[in-house]
Image 1 (tube, one colour):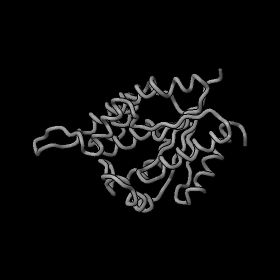
Image 2 (tube, rainbow, N blue to C red; image 1 turned 180 degrees about the vertical axis):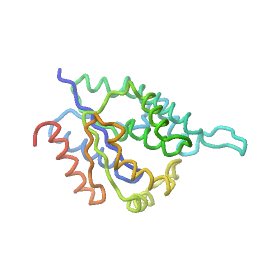
Image 3 (tube, one colour; image 1 turned 180 degrees about the horizontal axis):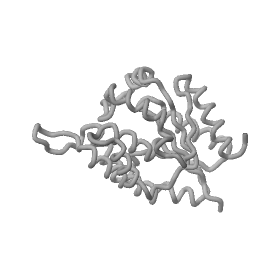
Image 4 (cartoon, rainbow, N blue to C red; image 1 turned 90 degrees about the vertical axis):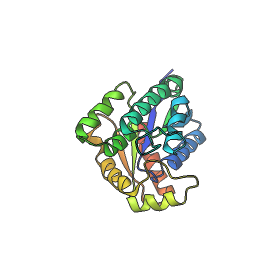
Length: 217
């Protein structure tokens, strides 16, 4: 059995990672290819806890009252979720020859944690990368580059409560960080995709990159 491919889709909140994960999964599946979509935080026990923290349903005590956990705690939880996600879901599918498409991966940890922490950013990035050193590298990472203003407009159409990291200033910093994400993952196969165009046009760019990966283009 040939091992499947691991494809990660990344970007700021509102970039369209969830939509494009679904569209790519549907497209590959329609071609008869074995494919499985997933996401991070995962649907495992640690991932569920993280999602509750992101929406304010789980908080910790603080001097000024209940608050979200600080960035080192979140970084550790995300890393723990990733190891569990790999062991329980990603690796078994890959071993069965299934292409796995994940909506976010450790790039998000590096980006979000380094920009929400104080102190030396390079040191923080090194620490977060060390936490995730055992994470299997994707065969392809697709970064959806979207202007912060466009992403903000898209977030406004979402249902549900606002999440922890959706502050406008942070998202602007993240958009800049993602454009240079390859600096921190120099050995990874990273392809930047213009996410400011229509959903269909973005999907076409993504499908072409996957065809190149599969040596079909």
